[in-house]
Length: 325
Image: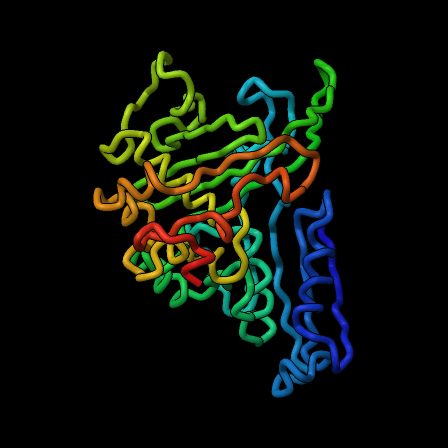
């Protein structure tokens, strides 16, 4: 369905308010395709030089994926599996690279700064995401080095989930609360999650694209791989857990650069960096783990377990983040 909107604002209308209305309009169910037209003359404080200029962009983006029988589940969309969370983003408009496909990791928190940048304004530094590279030179710069663009996506869900299948009933699942993390680079492709009953999952999607073998399940179960990047699974899982610990309550730049919260000296920018043996004790023995105190149908801070801002450790003499800042 194509949904066309004309965004018209007064002179005192802030870009972030324009953005809020815009995102609310194109995130409704059953409208996976959006075309938005921004008359620049109606946003004088943002783009005075562009009066009477109209920029039109088309965004093709479903709000979620959909599993249909995979993982022995009734059809639905509330899980952290790849079928539910990995969806395409297609953008067409002035200056957008024509016919170019990239595997840069992007997420919904990147849409706000992207739209702000499209209307000619610089995204605020307290945004939880980055403006998505749309031009050929921007994409080339973002892909030139593994440290120039983030490799992670935070995934989370609270409360009720309902199957949408025709057969087998649609019994509500009341404890479908979890936090997940996708990490992707040319070297690794991982999904890690912690459920509200404190069950952990880790999938090596390169070796197991169907996400069949949970590498953190019973050790008696035979897996297709026993190492990731040639390292024991527990070493990789410890780093992923600490990364999720930061992301589950992050704000602003910490959502974009979560490793900087764990390593303020700036010597760790990726999962690969964090896997250096000198950090083993910090991640595997010292750092606080992600866990829930109980399952709840929504975001209730008392049920969310330890918070990085209060209890998380920083790699410098094991001090707490609250003491570091």
